[in-house]
Length: 141
Image (cartoon, rainbow, N blue to C red; front, top):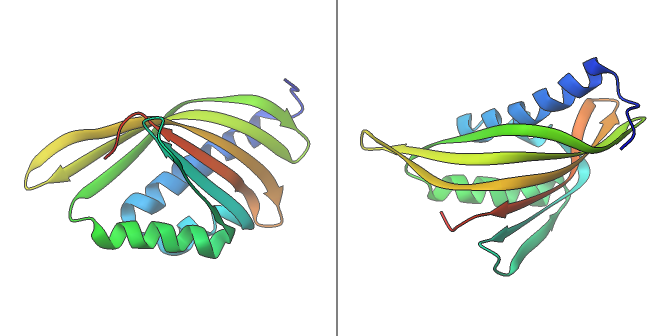
């Protein structure tokens, strides 16, 4: 792994991952959309099943996200943790992190699922953004 990223850049990338999770949970659509590059892609595999996606472009990813939000009746918390870099270079990095998905509904909080994000991030004029995201979930939610 290359260590070409300054600590401040690493922190900015970790903040990007946290902001994307917060924006999804709080339905801050502009913040969520700005977490992705225009040409980003997103894919997901649940419990080793078939690949969902890839969903192409910021618009395609946002259609997926807003469609999922429209069907949810609970309050969700996407907790991102244990972030580490598998590759890092000038203006780009590969990051792995854990996801813990928690739901609260009717006064009850429960664990929905957990998983692992595999992210590719790039530094753009808008700052660090996700260019590619893959999520492996441990079980359906």
